[in-house]
Length: 246
Image 1 (cartoon, rainbow, N blue to C red):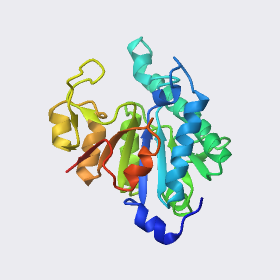
Image 2: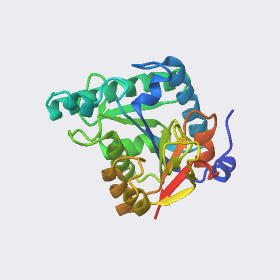
Image 3: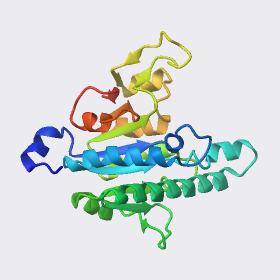
């Protein structure tokens, strides 16, 4: 259902966001690869956000196919392993593009590693122009450099496209003081500062990503992606998950 411009401005608290998805999130309950049902669910949730006029960039990890750190820990050259991990993110991005376009969401995949036969090269101005035209832009292949995680890449791309908010979609409903799976008494934070995340060693994302966000004052929202309408609620300013900021 389409909405008017007035309804869009009233509904959306943020005009442009960067959604960071882990590759593992696409596995669902599988041990490896992509579960089609999860892919379709995420695509439908993204469509809800696009329909209220929010511009969306997307960064997806590759851990469901190959993790560079894991390969390096088993003796593989770290640069080679990270390059393989970056290629895995392109595979996930193409799968997400297919899921989005099957439900009528215009999408572009851009890669930090040029591969013109399957997607566009990542060019900041071109990505911004796509966003202005209402297209979802999936920015793949990390930063194009080894030794950087897709968390860091997500923050970097958010800064480059001037996103108002970074959403890190996970399998838990926010940031806790300890693992809520093994500790029933774990306490969820509603808000945290960048300093608190770094000083307490909270596993929100890697320290490089948090430091980048802190330098620019870019807020990060950590939330559960498996709950219907959660992403839409977040962009409408409703209290969802844990907000990390200054």
